[in-house]
Length: 255
Image (cartoon, rainbow, N blue to C red):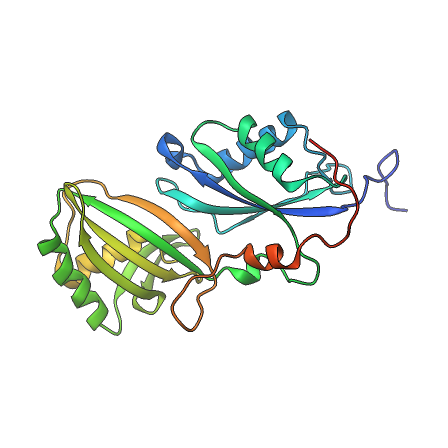
């Protein structure tokens, strides 16, 4: 017979919360693994009643979606957690925000709406703002126009299976250039695929089509994630949960 862990099984998941958080400042250089460890420690410090998986090595029920690359800041990172006790989403948001480092901000927390589908199904596009210090609008704009005029732009991308040639152009929904304070700004709307096309890949494409090489490291910020609609708008992925409201009228515990 298969071995079974001693003791009763863990309590079931009675509530799912979907959380939007930001990583800013120095923590933009933290890896996804480091951020995941920080979040799990903060959940324990905040005494959030997490649900756990069964088996000999129980893990808290946490699902991460589309983490921003190391070195990029973000205002739209998403995670879903499962709870063993129903809680007020705003109380969880406030307690978790207080338990996390200063450069991680918990911006929103909603209860998963029943029958609204998975959070991953609502995210297929990212909105990026890339500041290019030391570069002028006059240098950036022609390069962006040249990129958009091409149908195919292949760049070498590092993947977990080694270098791979990737056509960046189909993933770039839109791109525009503007002037900032001491920098040019590249605004991007990029579809998320496999492998994912990120701001550094688009900058590699600009180098390929227009020999554009920023003199200083770029500063990328993901401003939004969501599903791209027919009008070109990226929808807030938490809106369906807000519309659905709580799936029942049970009382919420405080954290």
